[in-house]
Length: 69
Image 1: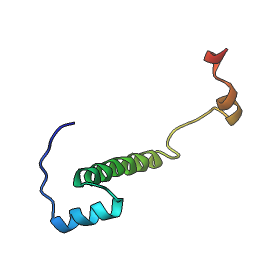
Image 2 (image 1 turned 60 degrees about the vertical axis):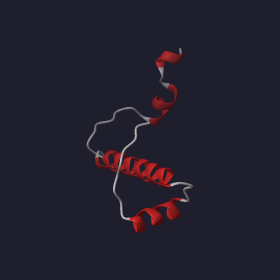
Image 3 (image 1 turned 180 degrees about the horizontal axis):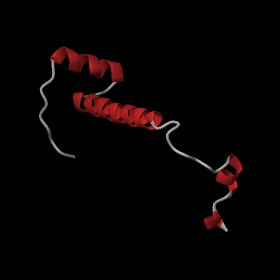
Image 4 (image 1 turned 45 degrees about the vertical axis):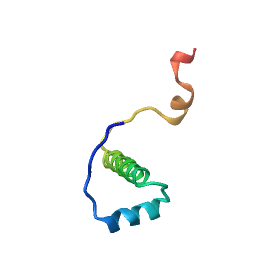
């Protein structure tokens, strides 16, 4: 892990610690950063909906893995 110095308003940081139920400020910030990354990835995937051609059917997806023999 790498150390980074970030200046945040004290009230905001205290609210974050309380909202995420963190035991430390570091844990609260890590949780918030991970959640933001997860939400942005989800939004990016949702934005692709209907923009990709997909030709496999459900049965083929379930049982069509040729690598399994």
